[in-house]
Image (cartoon, rainbow, N blue to C red):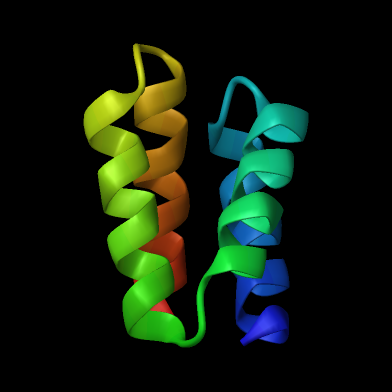
Amino acid sequence: MNEKIEKALFEARPYVEYFEELKTKVNELYSKASDDKEFKALIEEEISKAKEPFKTDLRIFLQKFEAF
């Protein structure tokens, strides 16, 4: 799963405003998840709590993650 996250972060990088914060949050959530499904649920939960523009950064990452 880690390779999938790396690819999604790479693809999302040109479109996100707060890349370092996104990378930190994604790695934090990845460490809590046991599989892709749980990781996706944690990202979606974080999206619901986040404020703009970071919320959009998370959405972009999730879109790229789901594409792989």
